[in-house]
Image (cartoon, rainbow, N blue to C red):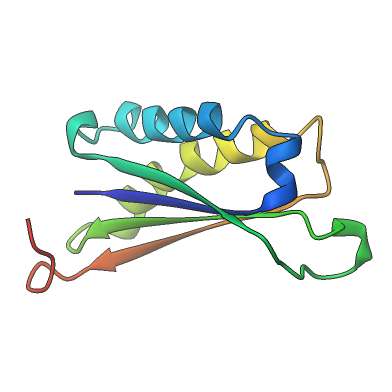
Length: 114
């Protein structure tokens, strides 16, 4: 049921092994205590992105972690921290100026279909 959606400027894929990063993010969430069988992780390359000032050169990576509602902030952060760390590590050497962000959102149990 948890979803990790990685959006990234397409040119990031020239510097980062996206499939490896997706596996690292997937495994990070599983290692944080979510049943791996339930996690859905995907990446979406964005052909156009405008990011901040020129120093970013348009390189950006944003992940959204979607969880069913009911978890406290500390638990959400314990899931988000290792995912964010995997993202930062992926760009550290090849794209150190890449804008990397992560957001955690709740999904309503009443409107999420299983």
